Image (cartoon, rainbow, N blue to C red; front, side):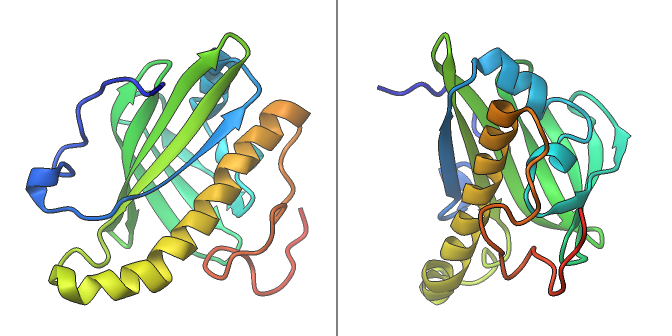
Length: 188
């Protein structure tokens, strides 16, 4: 049984555009869907829920023109530009670094019952899309998919942690990540 709302695919990300192999992770959260929406739609929410986020400054919020930045523990800074906003359900955004797009990302919440929901994050990485399928398959399978899956699992677990505990998720709570954790310890 699928809990996911029947929404249109992200522009340019459907099967006709040639995009291959998005990476998706979902987590059951023992919190009502409307409460999880309140958390993911709050400005600066990544500072509370994201285990690799040092800061999450907001330029504009809320809605489809929302803009913020993710300052990772590793020192990387990405901009998030929101494209679509589905009140109570989720949003779609692009991640950019130095002005260039890195990925499209879809966040969705689906109620499983009155006291629980699923949080799903799907990433459409642009990184390998310019190469022929035969060339990009191995790097995607061996490196990109495992690294993104590990990262996304930590992120959805961070949101589960915050909704269950009511306090910010500790940095690197679910283990360090080679791309997004600090090389030296950072004080909370």
